[in-house]
Amino acid sequence: MVNVIFCGFGEDQDKRVFAKEGDVLLRVASNNGVTIPTDCQDGMCGSCAVRIEELNDAPSTQFESKVDPDAWDKDKYTTYMEDKELETLVEMGAITKKEAETAQQYVQQTPVRLACQCIIKGAMLVKPFE
Ligand code: FES
Image 1 (cartoon, protein in one colour):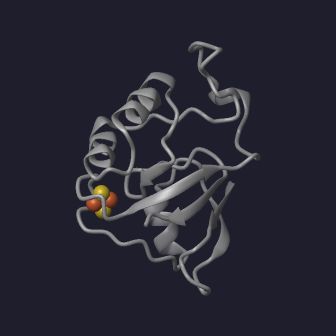
Image 2: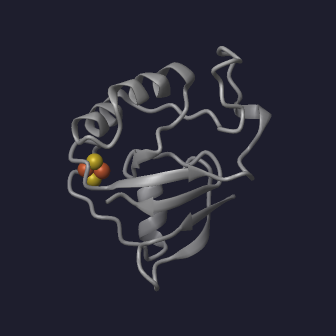
């Protein structure tokens, strides 16, 4: 179980919850009374975009990659993002094409994610994307 902290969603929705690794962020939010707007639930519309910060109690070495150690941020855990999600985030201007390429290259998540596509890998802080 990992900590997921929702912040900025409203007084009654800002909370810390425990989530299972591998669960989808949107489902965790919904199951805990946190409202994240959705439309397609398939990574295409961008309505469920949220800001993500990885927290320090993320799993450590088991998710490390063997990529370039100079560019690799060891404080972040490995997160594979589907092309579909990255393309949607670039199209809506939430991230740059360069950020998308870097995320793919180093298998790390971008600071904005689509909650319907975000598989929880470690502790995170989740804020609305505005
Ligand atoms: S609900 Fe459409 S991208 Fe997540």
